[in-house]
Image (tube, rainbow, N blue to C red; front, side):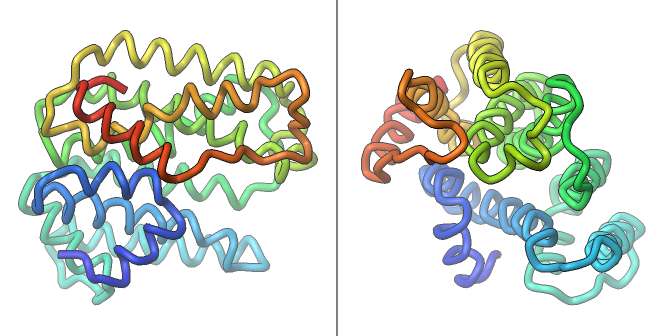
Length: 251
Protein backbone atom coordinates (compact mmCIF):
# COMPACT_ATOMS: atom_id res chain seq x y z
CA UNK A 1 0.00 0.00 0.00
CA UNK A 2 1.48 3.40 -0.95
CA UNK A 3 2.14 5.84 1.85
CA UNK A 4 0.18 9.09 2.38
CA UNK A 5 3.32 10.97 1.33
CA UNK A 6 3.16 9.40 -2.12
CA UNK A 7 -0.49 10.42 -2.46
CA UNK A 8 0.37 13.98 -1.50
CA UNK A 9 3.26 14.24 -3.94
CA UNK A 10 1.14 12.98 -6.81
CA UNK A 11 -1.56 15.57 -6.15
CA UNK A 12 1.15 18.17 -6.76
CA UNK A 13 3.27 16.71 -9.57
CA UNK A 14 0.90 14.40 -11.44
CA UNK A 15 -2.60 15.65 -10.59
CA UNK A 16 -4.42 14.51 -13.73
CA UNK A 17 -3.35 10.88 -13.47
CA UNK A 18 -4.03 11.02 -9.75
CA UNK A 19 -7.57 12.37 -10.22
CA UNK A 20 -8.37 9.56 -12.63
CA UNK A 21 -6.84 6.93 -10.35
CA UNK A 22 -9.08 8.03 -7.49
CA UNK A 23 -12.12 6.99 -9.55
CA UNK A 24 -11.23 3.33 -9.05
CA UNK A 25 -11.92 1.10 -6.07
CA UNK A 26 -9.43 0.87 -3.20
CA UNK A 27 -7.34 -1.81 -4.88
CA UNK A 28 -7.17 0.13 -8.14
CA UNK A 29 -6.25 3.32 -6.30
CA UNK A 30 -3.44 1.64 -4.37
CA UNK A 31 -2.00 -0.02 -7.46
CA UNK A 32 -2.12 3.06 -9.66
CA UNK A 33 -0.74 5.38 -7.01
CA UNK A 34 2.14 2.98 -6.46
CA UNK A 35 2.91 2.78 -10.19
CA UNK A 36 2.67 6.56 -10.58
CA UNK A 37 4.81 7.02 -7.51
CA UNK A 38 7.45 4.78 -9.07
CA UNK A 39 7.27 6.78 -12.29
CA UNK A 40 7.61 10.05 -10.39
CA UNK A 41 10.79 8.77 -8.75
CA UNK A 42 12.24 8.15 -12.21
CA UNK A 43 10.98 11.38 -13.74
CA UNK A 44 12.40 13.65 -11.04
CA UNK A 45 15.99 12.40 -11.29
CA UNK A 46 17.13 14.80 -14.05
CA UNK A 47 15.80 17.72 -11.99
CA UNK A 48 17.74 16.64 -8.91
CA UNK A 49 21.20 16.18 -10.42
CA UNK A 50 23.69 18.63 -11.88
CA UNK A 51 25.77 16.01 -13.69
CA UNK A 52 24.69 13.27 -16.09
CA UNK A 53 26.86 10.70 -14.34
CA UNK A 54 25.08 11.24 -11.04
CA UNK A 55 21.76 10.82 -12.81
CA UNK A 56 22.92 7.57 -14.37
CA UNK A 57 23.93 6.30 -10.94
CA UNK A 58 20.43 7.03 -9.65
CA UNK A 59 18.81 5.22 -12.58
CA UNK A 60 21.16 2.32 -12.04
CA UNK A 61 19.98 2.16 -8.42
CA UNK A 62 16.48 1.53 -9.72
CA UNK A 63 17.68 -0.98 -12.31
CA UNK A 64 19.41 -2.89 -9.53
CA UNK A 65 16.30 -2.72 -7.35
CA UNK A 66 14.18 -4.09 -10.20
CA UNK A 67 16.71 -6.87 -10.76
CA UNK A 68 16.45 -7.80 -7.09
CA UNK A 69 12.66 -7.92 -7.34
CA UNK A 70 12.54 -10.15 -10.41
CA UNK A 71 15.41 -12.33 -9.22
CA UNK A 72 13.57 -12.84 -5.91
CA UNK A 73 16.54 -11.54 -3.95
CA UNK A 74 16.25 -9.39 -0.84
CA UNK A 75 14.97 -6.03 -2.09
CA UNK A 76 16.49 -2.78 -0.84
CA UNK A 77 14.08 -0.94 1.41
CA UNK A 78 12.37 2.13 -0.02
CA UNK A 79 8.85 3.52 0.21
CA UNK A 80 8.35 2.55 -3.46
CA UNK A 81 10.54 -0.51 -4.04
CA UNK A 82 9.15 -2.48 -1.09
CA UNK A 83 5.44 -2.34 -2.04
CA UNK A 84 6.36 -2.47 -5.74
CA UNK A 85 8.04 -5.84 -5.19
CA UNK A 86 4.87 -7.18 -3.57
CA UNK A 87 2.70 -5.92 -6.44
CA UNK A 88 4.99 -7.30 -9.15
CA UNK A 89 4.96 -10.75 -7.59
CA UNK A 90 1.21 -10.63 -6.99
CA UNK A 91 0.22 -9.91 -10.58
CA UNK A 92 3.29 -11.11 -12.54
CA UNK A 93 3.92 -7.69 -14.06
CA UNK A 94 6.15 -8.11 -17.16
CA UNK A 95 9.68 -6.93 -16.48
CA UNK A 96 10.11 -5.62 -20.02
CA UNK A 97 7.77 -2.71 -19.31
CA UNK A 98 9.54 -1.75 -16.09
CA UNK A 99 12.96 -1.81 -17.77
CA UNK A 100 11.60 0.14 -20.74
CA UNK A 101 10.12 2.82 -18.49
CA UNK A 102 13.44 3.33 -16.71
CA UNK A 103 15.30 3.55 -20.03
CA UNK A 104 12.73 5.99 -21.40
CA UNK A 105 12.98 8.33 -18.44
CA UNK A 106 16.77 8.12 -18.50
CA UNK A 107 16.61 9.78 -21.95
CA UNK A 108 15.85 13.00 -20.08
CA UNK A 109 19.52 13.12 -19.04
CA UNK A 110 20.54 13.47 -22.70
CA UNK A 111 20.71 17.16 -23.74
CA UNK A 112 20.61 16.29 -27.44
CA UNK A 113 17.37 17.45 -29.12
CA UNK A 114 15.01 15.11 -30.94
CA UNK A 115 16.14 15.18 -34.56
CA UNK A 116 12.79 14.12 -36.01
CA UNK A 117 9.17 13.88 -34.98
CA UNK A 118 9.55 10.11 -35.09
CA UNK A 119 12.19 10.38 -32.36
CA UNK A 120 9.71 12.33 -30.24
CA UNK A 121 7.06 9.68 -30.88
CA UNK A 122 9.49 6.94 -29.78
CA UNK A 123 10.19 8.89 -26.59
CA UNK A 124 6.48 9.33 -25.89
CA UNK A 125 5.92 5.60 -26.38
CA UNK A 126 8.76 4.63 -24.04
CA UNK A 127 7.63 6.98 -21.29
CA UNK A 128 3.92 7.78 -21.19
CA UNK A 129 3.06 4.87 -23.49
CA UNK A 130 4.78 2.28 -21.35
CA UNK A 131 3.35 3.81 -18.19
CA UNK A 132 -0.15 3.46 -19.68
CA UNK A 133 0.52 -0.19 -20.51
CA UNK A 134 1.62 -0.91 -16.95
CA UNK A 135 -1.28 1.04 -15.47
CA UNK A 136 -3.87 -0.83 -17.51
CA UNK A 137 -2.25 -4.19 -16.77
CA UNK A 138 -2.38 -3.69 -13.00
CA UNK A 139 -6.15 -3.22 -13.34
CA UNK A 140 -6.85 -5.84 -16.01
CA UNK A 141 -4.07 -8.08 -17.27
CA UNK A 142 -6.11 -8.99 -20.34
CA UNK A 143 -6.59 -5.42 -21.54
CA UNK A 144 -5.19 -4.59 -25.00
CA UNK A 145 -1.65 -3.39 -24.26
CA UNK A 146 -1.14 -2.08 -27.80
CA UNK A 147 -4.17 0.18 -27.43
CA UNK A 148 -2.86 1.38 -24.06
CA UNK A 149 0.49 2.15 -25.69
CA UNK A 150 -1.17 4.30 -28.36
CA UNK A 151 -3.18 6.17 -25.76
CA UNK A 152 -0.14 6.81 -23.62
CA UNK A 153 1.85 7.98 -26.62
CA UNK A 154 -0.80 10.60 -27.38
CA UNK A 155 -0.57 11.87 -23.80
CA UNK A 156 3.22 11.98 -24.02
CA UNK A 157 3.19 13.97 -27.26
CA UNK A 158 0.66 16.38 -25.80
CA UNK A 159 2.94 16.74 -22.80
CA UNK A 160 5.86 17.65 -25.06
CA UNK A 161 3.72 20.34 -26.68
CA UNK A 162 2.73 21.66 -23.26
CA UNK A 163 6.42 21.76 -22.31
CA UNK A 164 7.43 23.67 -25.46
CA UNK A 165 8.01 26.98 -23.60
CA UNK A 166 10.64 25.25 -21.47
CA UNK A 167 12.35 23.08 -24.07
CA UNK A 168 12.02 24.92 -27.41
CA UNK A 169 15.69 25.87 -27.23
CA UNK A 170 16.74 22.42 -25.97
CA UNK A 171 15.30 18.95 -26.55
CA UNK A 172 12.52 20.31 -28.81
CA UNK A 173 14.65 22.82 -30.73
CA UNK A 174 14.63 20.83 -33.97
CA UNK A 175 10.89 20.12 -33.95
CA UNK A 176 8.31 22.35 -35.59
CA UNK A 177 5.65 23.27 -33.05
CA UNK A 178 2.81 22.90 -35.53
CA UNK A 179 4.01 19.45 -36.50
CA UNK A 180 4.17 18.46 -32.85
CA UNK A 181 0.58 19.59 -32.25
CA UNK A 182 -0.67 17.81 -35.38
CA UNK A 183 1.16 14.61 -34.46
CA UNK A 184 -0.28 14.66 -30.94
CA UNK A 185 -3.79 15.23 -32.30
CA UNK A 186 -3.46 12.41 -34.82
CA UNK A 187 -2.12 10.08 -32.13
CA UNK A 188 -5.07 10.90 -29.87
CA UNK A 189 -7.67 10.23 -32.56
CA UNK A 190 -5.98 6.96 -33.50
CA UNK A 191 -5.87 5.86 -29.87
CA UNK A 192 -9.49 6.82 -29.32
CA UNK A 193 -10.57 4.80 -32.35
CA UNK A 194 -8.52 1.73 -31.38
CA UNK A 195 -9.62 1.84 -27.73
CA UNK A 196 -13.30 2.24 -28.44
CA UNK A 197 -15.40 1.51 -25.35
CA UNK A 198 -13.15 0.85 -22.36
CA UNK A 199 -14.23 -1.43 -19.48
CA UNK A 200 -15.18 0.51 -16.38
CA UNK A 201 -12.47 -1.14 -14.28
CA UNK A 202 -9.74 0.13 -16.64
CA UNK A 203 -10.96 3.72 -17.01
CA UNK A 204 -9.12 4.95 -13.86
CA UNK A 205 -5.90 4.26 -15.80
CA UNK A 206 -7.01 6.15 -18.90
CA UNK A 207 -9.68 8.76 -18.10
CA UNK A 208 -7.16 11.59 -17.68
CA UNK A 209 -6.40 11.33 -21.40
CA UNK A 210 -9.83 12.76 -22.14
CA UNK A 211 -8.28 16.17 -21.42
CA UNK A 212 -5.97 15.90 -24.44
CA UNK A 213 -8.27 17.55 -27.01
CA UNK A 214 -8.85 20.51 -24.67
CA UNK A 215 -5.13 21.03 -24.19
CA UNK A 216 -4.53 20.79 -27.93
CA UNK A 217 -7.35 23.20 -28.74
CA UNK A 218 -5.98 25.78 -26.31
CA UNK A 219 -2.47 25.39 -27.74
CA UNK A 220 -3.72 25.73 -31.32
CA UNK A 221 -5.21 29.20 -30.95
CA UNK A 222 -3.98 31.62 -33.60
CA UNK A 223 -2.71 34.05 -30.95
CA UNK A 224 -1.06 31.39 -28.77
CA UNK A 225 2.68 32.00 -28.31
CA UNK A 226 4.14 28.51 -28.05
CA UNK A 227 7.49 29.77 -26.75
CA UNK A 228 6.20 31.84 -23.86
CA UNK A 229 2.65 30.75 -22.96
CA UNK A 230 1.57 27.79 -20.90
CA UNK A 231 -1.89 26.25 -21.04
CA UNK A 232 -4.39 27.31 -18.40
CA UNK A 233 -6.97 24.59 -17.71
CA UNK A 234 -8.83 25.08 -14.45
CA UNK A 235 -8.68 21.96 -12.22
CA UNK A 236 -12.46 21.78 -11.56
CA UNK A 237 -13.19 21.62 -15.29
CA UNK A 238 -10.47 19.03 -15.82
CA UNK A 239 -11.82 16.95 -12.96
CA UNK A 240 -15.34 17.11 -14.39
CA UNK A 241 -14.12 16.03 -17.82
CA UNK A 242 -12.23 13.11 -16.31
CA UNK A 243 -15.31 11.98 -14.37
CA UNK A 244 -17.50 12.19 -17.48
CA UNK A 245 -14.91 10.24 -19.44
CA UNK A 246 -14.99 7.47 -16.85
CA UNK A 247 -18.77 7.37 -16.92
CA UNK A 248 -18.85 7.16 -20.72
CA UNK A 249 -16.03 4.62 -20.91
CA UNK A 250 -14.19 6.60 -23.59
CA UNK A 251 -11.20 8.91 -23.51
